[in-house]
Length: 332
Ligand code: ADP
Image (cartoon, protein in one colour):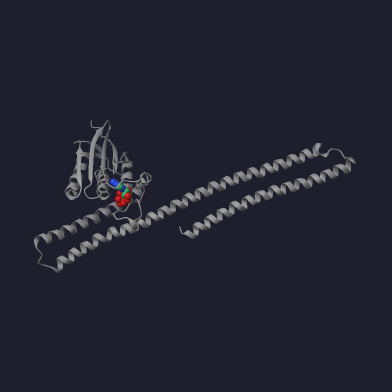
């Protein structure tokens, strides 16, 4: 929503309140004027009829008039209070809707900026690799395989991005339903963290302690998406030399997975927001890490479908701990 519309909204609300209060005061005044007029008229009528100066204020006619005046005053005031409350509630609801719309617009703008970047950079680098391969037909083996590998990694990055976009669209329109089957969560997690160690092991210290053979009822794709996203984030939001640790174990009827890092950490006020669609901490223009703000949204939604939960806490002395719990499969 544009700034002009927001200002117009506030001006309209202020006008409504002022004009409403003014009409209430005016009605009260008019009611009083009518009362005084009627009172004078009745008093005059009374004095002509009785031809005496009897105490009019003790007469029943005055009592009825006073009651009528008081009840009309009460009616105006109670109507005013009810209307004011309705107006306040309506304005508050409108304000909340506006704020949500503004926030969603901001996130969508950030998402478009980041998705453009995420699509453009692997495409440009693949194009460059292919052009180099085409131009120089006498490349040594090392360089040749490096260029091919880089291109394959870029294509893989694009595939993951597109898969994530499709999956999140399917989650949103409820067309994605996990196929509940017995899954070995220990091997899925171990595979992801071993691969991550292979790829990032030079820059970060990645280790894991995984209790073997733990089974959950779930869907391999959903479980891989969940663990991959948490692992990717731990890699992305930590500096070189950081430590990342994954611990998987059973606790009563649950399987618990914790992923802790000693990276940038997440401010307290952002902890619940990071699970919203497109939400990224900070602003896209000033943010250096790549991402779309879809990862944790998908993680939360997938866990809901698998009857699992996710919690986020601070690590000590710094960094973040994500804790996931999933119901353990009951093996008969
Ligand atoms: P993306 O990583 O694509 O931005 P996510 O939905 O995965 O989107 O994460 C949302 C936001 O939560 C990230 O932008 C980041 O600011 C924050 N975040 C997630 N994981 C971590 C982490 N391990 N450490 C610090 N910040 C994190």
